[in-house]
Every structure is written in structure tokens, then in C-alpha cells.
Image 1: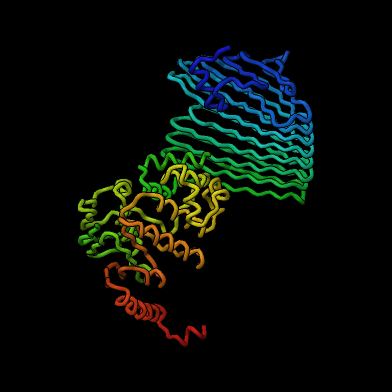
Image 2: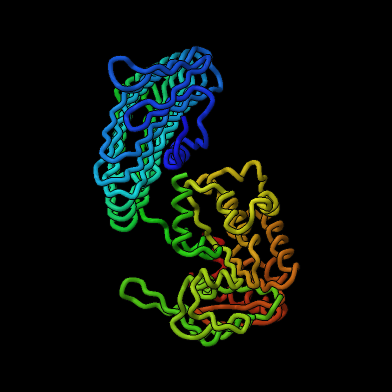
Length: 307
Length: 245
């Protein structure tokens, strides 16, 4: 199946894909799976009871990736999808998810991706999820991802959750439960502009001894956009957690950032920090002395901050 | 190459207006190596910022290569060949060092730029330009961003600050080499006698005015005398008191 220019552009933006990958892949468009392949070690199969797929990665699979992007190119589509991803014991893989909406009309287009990810004992997962919106229409572009990550003993996960631009409204809900020795790093990067709104809730439970989690959130709110961050790390065992929220606010943007830590074990070590501020004037001045205009300097600073 | 004609600068602090620079008349010649020195708070950094366009002078004119640049922006002044190395260069959270350097130079010369300031490219190119870098490392990166640009006039604001003595000697050599390549006028804001001794000419700025300018033979004894006066005037004591303390 061939994709058109708009679909290719969305794929490039959300998954850095310039062509359909040869390995395990599932591309969903306007509520239907349009391309699906499994590989020898990664099975991609449709769910039978509800929309969505199961991705089963065989134990011990190394250095493989599975791409499961979602494209919405019509106005008035509300797509709810349930995906289950199981990373087998000892596997080491990359999962590239993400959703791009091109809304050409006046009706709202929405994607609610509900993911359950199980990272089995000793497995490693790198998870990339980019969200992006575009389109000449006035209809809203809405993305509401819900992700639950179950991390078994000594598993590792690195998750990069990115909203590039063009998403009018998002409510993100990320939950993770870590067993003994499990390690999780979540990096969230968000840019909102115009009248966009973004809410991000995260709950990380450190349930096993020696588990650890680090949550880093970097965001920029431009124009009249609003953002709310509520990450919380709960330690129920001897474990370590750190939450860091950094935001740049511009124009009439509004940001509320309330990182929280809860210790339910005497050997828990939890820290958090949050900062919201404008672009430092010294940064702008420095780049202008190198010949950039104020607008170019601002752009370079924001790109670096959200890198 | 640069001429300042009766330049004044006032800065506001709340409702109060402070005179920072008063009636600065200064001419810098092509290819000369200048040291700009004087007591803290004398106006050295402010003068540099006026030349770079970071501060807008209240009165007076700046002529650069025969053109009136008084009303040019920072960006425009950078484009006509004025460069300024900050005393306290800002950090950029999230930005990789290579991305900062790319603003000044093309990708193929990034490694050479880092090596020139004594930083191993493999260790630094992909590092973030953030608080994990020491003040000394930031100064070297700052110097790299400035020296990679084609400039006619470079002002270095206290390059010695925060840099260890051994590294400073290397950085100073780098500044000298860049200067010797020709067609560049260098101004080093400094309190360091080593830099003062290298200068073709020393400009002494105090209380927002040019107090003296001339050869190092003429100016160095004056500075030594002047700094002693300043110290005693400030603390109101004498050398014995300092020893007791």
C-alpha cells in the first residue's frame, strides 16, 4: 500500500520514517489498520474484542524495533485504540509509537491511544511517542494518550514522550509500576502555542526494592496556551526517584507545575524540582552577538531546550 | 576603526538614574591590541556593552570603519564585524555545545574549534551547555564561539575570570594568535598584569571616565599606585590592619 504526501509527512514528523519500515510495523489510519507486518521475533496481531493490536516480542529479542504510528487525515474522526505491548524476558527493543493528525475540515479530529506495556523480567525497552498536528482546517486536533507500564524485576525502560506542535488539546495520563530492581526514565517534551491546552498526569509507583525512576519534563508555553503538569512518584520500597519539571513561558502562556513525591518506606530517597521562567535575556543577547536576530535566537534557544 | 564621540550612558535602578559612562571619547586603531583596565565598577563592561549595542548610549556617536553605528542593533553590529566575549557567558539548558558552536562556524570546523580552546571534541560536542559545565569550561566555549567568527573588532571581557592559571596562558596565546592573523583589533578587559604587559596600549577607565591611556610603561605604574589608593580609601585602614585580620 502506498501512502500519499500528507501521510508521508505525518510519518516523517512522528516517527522519523521516510518509508515503510521492513520489520514489524502497524500503521493505523483514520481508525483502521492499513499496513501490518510481523517479524520473526515480533508478532503484531489485531485484537478481537476491541480496536487495537497486541505486539508480542519474543524473549531474548535484541536490537529490533517495532513501529506502530497512527495517522488521522480526515476531519471529524474520533479514534480510540487499545494496544498491548509485551516485551519478552531479556529482550532489548525499541518501540516507536506516535500520532499525527492532519485536519483539513471544521470538525474535531481526535485520537485516544490507550496503551498497556509489560516489560518482562530483565528486558529493556526504548519507547518513543511523538504527537503532531497540522492541517488547513479549523477543526480541533485532540490527542489523549493513556499509558500504563508494568515493569517486572530488573527491567529497564526509557520513554520519550514528545508533543512537537499543532495539537490543540491533550490530556496525557502516564502510569508506571516498578518491581524490584526495575529502572525507568521518562522524558517529556511539550510545546504549546496559540490557544492550545495540555495536561499531563504521571504516577510512578516504586513498588520493588532497588527500583528507580527519573522523570524529566521540559515544556514551552507560547501565545495564550496553557499547560498543567502533575507528576508524582510514590516509593513503597527502598528505592530512588527524581522528578524535574522545567518550563519556559512566553507571551500570555500559563503553566502550572506541581511535581510531587510520596514516601511510604523509610529507605526511600525522593527528590523533586520545578522551574518556570522566561527565556533569560542574557541567552538572547549572547546569540544576538553572534549575528542572530532576536527571533532566530529565541528559536535556537527553544529548540535546544526541547531537544 | 572605532571612534566614540562624547558617549554617555545612564542606567536605571528602580526610579534612580545612575551615570555609568560620562563623556567617553575614544579612538581605536586597526590591528592594535588594547587592554582596558580600571577599578571594579569603573564602567569597563558597560563600555564594551555600549560598543556591542547591548546597552544603548544616551548621548554621543559611535563610528565604526567610517560608518555611524550608533543606531545599529546588536545583530547588525555583529554582522559588521564586532564581537564580544562575555565575562559570564550564559548557559543553555538542553542545547548541545555543537549546536551553539554551529551558530558561529560550519560543522566541519567544530572539532578544531574545541581543540583550539583545549577541550576534547569527543567529550564535549554532544554535552549540554548547562550547569554541568564549570565556569572555566564555559569561558573556553565562549571563546570558541567568538574566535570562530570573522571579526574586525573583538572585545574580551575578563577572559581570565574563572580560568586556572595554566589554561589562561593557553587561552591568552589563542587570543594573541587570532589577533596576529591580522586585520583585527582586540580589546581585552582585564585586571591581569600578564595581559597588560602584552598590550600595545592600555586604557584606564575609572568612575565612568577615561582616566588615562598610553603605553604600558606609562600606565602600569599609575595603576599600581591607583589601586593602592583605592584599597585604602575603601577600607579606611592600613596594611597592618590587613595583616591582623
